[in-house]
Image 1 (tube, one colour):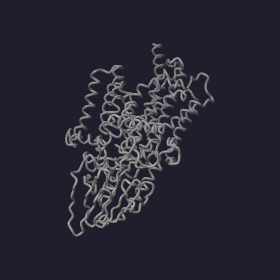
Image 2 (cartoon, rainbow, N blue to C red; image 1 turned 90 degrees about the vertical axis):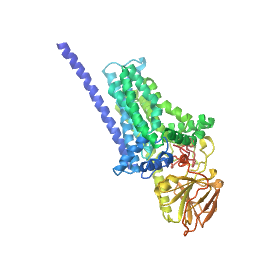
Image 3 (tube, one colour; image 1 turned 135 degrees about the vertical axis):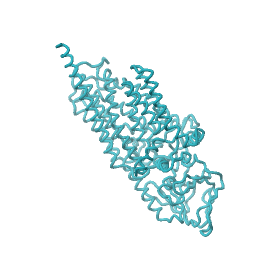
Image 4 (cartoon, one colour; image 1 turned 45 degrees about the horizontal axis):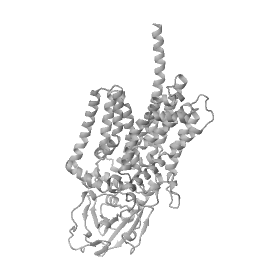
Length: 624
């Protein structure tokens, strides 16, 4: 009897620290989530950011995939949530920003739990010293526990204050939502071996994520399969696997069937998607005609964003590995222990990060926001490398590593500035567009542009913007970004022209209606007396506008106002308008509207994301 009592006491003594550690992890996760929200609220976007932002907002008003309201592949559950928010009075802009911030909170909390669990599971490699065996004894166990919690804190700091994650976490776009979902999905997949409920929850989560952004499910499918394989090896039954597949399939069909119906059936959806990707992949994919220059371009910009995203992690890791004072004699080699701990989780992290990286390199990537699907995996890897040094270290060293990571990330976002044209391109690693100044500058310039344009009466003014193609790898050099979506959204009382002179095409709309395709000859509304053309930069000889003054509006826009007296030849376009007394009817001389061409250009308006090492000025590449 006494032996049983003694055993029970020992078991209770072991359970208490485990329970306390779990509570500390949950508290840290909650604190990280709160920090993510608190950091992002003051800088939340108050204007729609780029093409995609406006197209999401248009999709909330009326879902029309053919008109790119929103663009393919459709984002059905993302738009559905925004429609629900709109029904209770939250407009599309604030709804999208709110989802970005909430997803940042999800990612920040999940990365704590995920990292701490990977440290504990890999403690044999990370805490066992040179033998690679699990560490024994209370002191080693305490070191592992401390290392897991400290690594979770470091991962949270790297996530919350990462300049790329913070920047996109302020915007009305889907990238930060995907970034936060990704971490939650990775943690859910890691827990699939914990039992039937965890397995089914993970399958449901992946299916829901596919409805938010269908590419997420495609890119992270290897991670889901890795979680299922892990669960199978640890005793999951065929019944559990079948139930998970059935649940995921049912949820997937629940959003896929309405999506196909909205597109006019499977054939319609396939046509819309094919038109969309035919406009992109020949320029950006080595597999679709872009050749080796496209691959080199994709790898270059991915490397740039990789370096920009890992600056705080590199600094914190350097401090933790190099700081020597107070090192205990029994502390194993920090670098070797960290590498062993990372190696123990390498296959898991590779299943998360490698498929998206390969896809983007081979097919299409034009915005840093794409990388948020795998950037958190790299932050987890850095935290695993640091975990042994933090677990065996005196507390000040661990705290210093976390504080340094947060300080550098926050400094780059809060006080950073873009690289000037006269500065070396290598400085783009720390001087880039991922900062609050870029957000404030764009919003200030857009406000100024809108105020200027509103001084022209809608009854006598037509607005226009110009798109010019780029050259070089992925068509990046010299691309002139058009602003028709912002003009359409913010100035619905004006007719808007999207001029594509190299194709002799014009796309026309008024208000929030889909653009319709016109030819090089078009008629303006009666009484039109000026054409106000909004540009991203000078058009040069490709579309001469030198006969009229070119006005700079802030750092983002240019404006040319052309007096109009009934007839104008502008490049390949012949523009006419009947006198005000004659009833007006729009005619098209060049064919019908092309749905897939209604919104082909999109990227972050603040800087040239797709330019290698952030080369100055445009291009702003076609993107989705």
